[in-house]
Length: 464
Length: 43
Image (cartoon, rainbow over all chains, first blue to last red):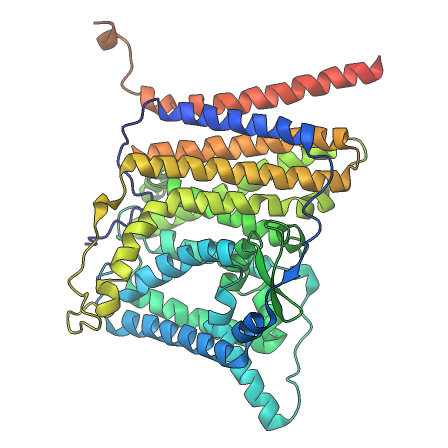
């Protein structure tokens, strides 16, 4: 049995001055006030230009130099190797094995935050990109020519990454933790999944090219790269530079399937937050229905969770689609397909806000494990103490439940206000008449209020 | 006394209604303004 808090929304009932639902009302008022402030004072688009300024040449060259790239790639490959080795050879206790926390917490939750702050930091550490580039360089050296790649079907866009994102979360929260029957995905399964994904990714890189696949199909590159569009650091024409924060996000969603990636992010976080709270009762009902019809317990639990994760995706997509259809009713509106990709980037800050709100406490607690006993004893067999921290433990008192709640509410409000701002800014591109632009955003206001209240409801139920 | 008579045991199950109120108000406001605008255009 796991000793770690693998029920993700890790908070106890808080001692709040007002009922939790009043925070949803307050957050909605903040959004409505922000909406009218934008309508009154924001009359020209400001995020369409990057306002790019390169950083100091020496600094940029140093960070992007080949030795640094090789070093980062080696580190990425080494850590992935440690994770796989720990999963295959270490303890099967998920709370003591390096691979679980490293993959599902440190990497999966850490890189979105790092990317939003510092740009696409995963790219140099991406182990598959490092291996793919090395293989490409070896091929060029031996064959004396560039490797030939297939033409990537442009209509696919980022859909492979969207499907991969759903599959990754499915593996973690559905396959691994099915309705209390098993506690968490096993280290061995995780290691095998990494190996399978590595084979698939390297094959796709060989077929379509390393950079092409990283931009469109490699789940981690696309997912972390999406959050990096919010920040003010990036690489352009081989130089590191600063740009206006949030401005790069507007260009990111031009590829087909980008909206699906960001919607999948919101949906999977929502499902993970809701499965042991708001959705518990309906999940139990469907689960029992399957069991009554003779399906096995584990199969019933997995099938039920799969249905609900897909329903979450459909529900989130439906809310977004309703907002777009509302916009479409405004005079001079562009086609629906244009709106669908044109406003997808406005959901990126919401996806980040959902991540922070749902996993902030989980991340803070489990990183203590990551950087103490999991680092010193990665196999969890009590046979090593590499850094002298193998006897460390998690201090659950570093965060109070009330503080966690305020972080959750703050993240959701800030994320949605930024989303609203990006949407208003993009509307000014499609409707140069700012009155029409503001009117078109009534519907995005409804989308943002719906996402905020839904998010706070999920959190309040999970917390109680 | 009253508390024991009212069926409040499952009141927690209906808390979601409070979270729905702001959404309903915003959508109501949008629909109301859209109808007013359409009537204005017709007039």
